[in-house]
Length: 89
Image 1 (tube, rainbow, N blue to C red):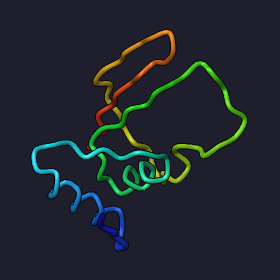
Image 2 (cartoon, rainbow, N blue to C red):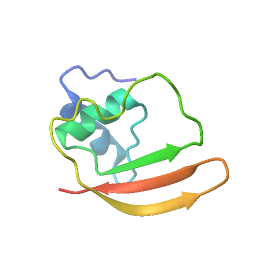
Image 3 (tube, rainbow, N blue to C red):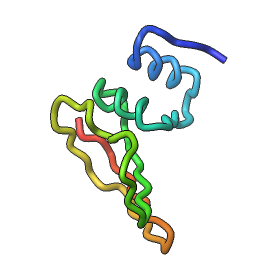
């Protein structure tokens, strides 16, 4: 296990270098927000379920500007809708 404490840009650069040709996956709202804000996230996948919660972490509160997304794939099931987006650069 490696701990990186010098920012999300360094985390993503080290993860991509270690992954080689494979994908790097980011899990959790906190880390995804930081990666989006820093401009180091290439794609975003959202799993929308048919339940509304009254609390929790808001996914996109830390973004200081608009982030453009292009839909790559939509998979609709009775349990959830899975939407994959490519982040516009």
